[in-house]
Amino acid sequence: DFRRVKNLKVYFDNNAISLTTDINEIEEWQGGDIVVFKKHIGIISDKRNRKGICFVIHHANPYQIYYEEDILEHRDDIIGHYRIS
Image (cartoon, rainbow, N blue to C red):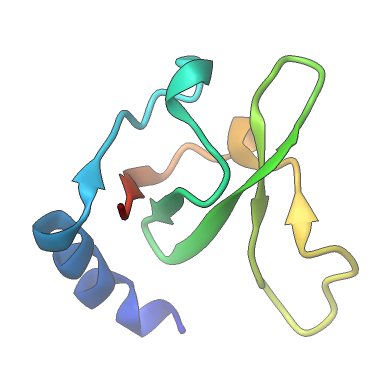
């Protein structure tokens, strides 16, 4: 639910390790990380594209065919990247 993104971001800011939002820093992105967009949240997959950029596991709409998608390069609204350990 996009209305919860702001609340979850505050939680992650206070309780998780904050990481880079630069998708070109390939080694900083690991499966299980959480990526926060302006109005959406996803989990980083261990699957990567040919450039080494991670796929994202997310649910965007009820008609979505695949839930693990290569979308990071196509998003310009990444506002957070976190790891809980």
